[in-house]
Length: 291
Image 1 (cartoon, rainbow, N blue to C red):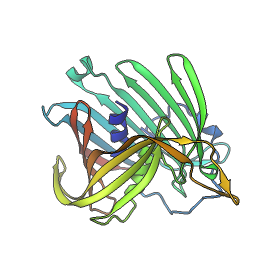
Image 2: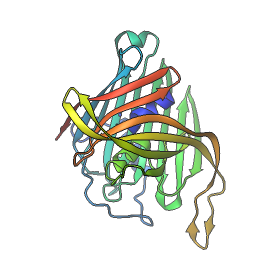
Image 3: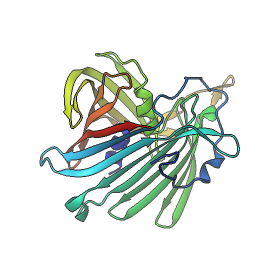
Image 4: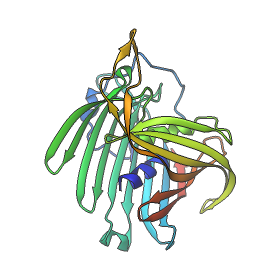
């Protein structure tokens, strides 16, 4: 199911946030520190106040199996002065599907409003009453993350070296929506959610019209390829410049999903077909609004 959650996140394709809902752990983000070394001013984050709802259907049976909601909050400031924008997504299985595949997952990402770097993320995976929680603090200046994993009353803590510019998977999708992507080209980034380092390659394969409840969208079509790995210590420095850690690849690059983003100004996520061990799932946009 982690693969399904990753895909839900990847479509941002996955409530914030500022007057709409509360975060799961409002005090725990206080350990985060704003970046200073790699801080790049990317301008105003254009997706603040956006809410998207997606319906997930099993491709073979056409049955609606889950609903995913993604909301982006507005910029806020903690008492210590840390500025952030929250992005919170939920995914829940529906109706009779819950009898054998109960899914109630929650994903939170908090990004720097200027650089759009991930500064903190939280994942709560509740699948068939198997609960796991991941608290992840990102340290862009050190190219590392600190992780707490909570499961069955046990807490495991570790520090993980990361490639430069590694993002939470939800934050990655919003970053992709700001890129100028050309048909025939590929674009690679790294994401991390607390359990594996993903090298995600986005291949732009063409353009198509996609039908939704909101009418037709003209879209770019993408293949999303995922390579899973762990970092190998140490996270060294050469002449004072941090270098990316060596990685041990556990799963070679495979086709995770096919996705469609509209060619409108905000590259609205429209559809994604996810490849899983129990068949393909089709996530399609039901509604989108902005406050």
